[in-house]
Image (cartoon, rainbow, N blue to C red; front, side, top):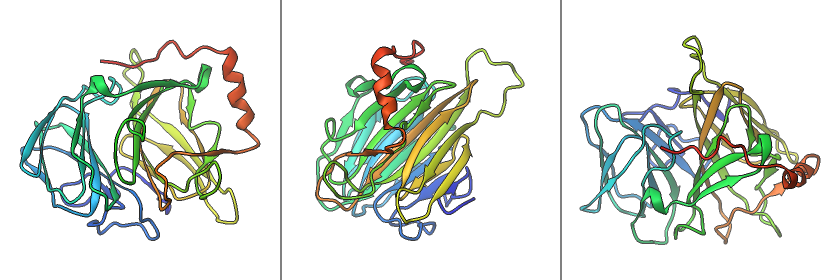
Length: 295
């Protein structure tokens, strides 16, 4: 485990399979202050989050979830897995207590960001979530834009899901968002990963893997080149990041949580000048026909 890579189970805390970067976590990362993530697996118990100065998005990873926010109940329709299209999500705003319930084995993720402005609770059904097919050829991927500025009113964070078919690259060309300047915003970023063997893979295909790369864009040193599996997390405090690679035979999912100190809530990026030209090659390629992944 490196400073920026957390294998599944290495950041467990209490009822949480994963608890990183949040205001109440004893596993807070030094210098990490704008984003957080929690995941949990239900086992005949309710899971609670106290009211806190942070905004949250509840994301069912598998199965249906009942969420109670400040005394009001919301039924979130889930999915068989993260590779079966979007699920309902719930934005809770700030300073509101949350209680979550699900059948045994159901899994949930909560994206968080310290925030002060209070926006209303919003339940986005899966049919309301914009599904974007981004890139082309072997850079094709599927994006669920439920927590982006165009879809959701929020204070600080930008949250989305990305599904990359086996053998494809996403988060590519390598890019960065670590400066407040013209055309770029400074945003921390969390990658929470899940992997699966492709449908029809043989029984012995049990080790579904992907890869993630992060490297320095200035004098701040960072060098991440990790093999990732379900439950693993890579933190991107700064630097060029990408590609996120789905190995042949294995599909790759990640939940992205971004937020930063800037005045504007927007995802503005700079491409690594050595590789940005790749975007121009997509104009003459079609989107991977395996997409979209749906229920």
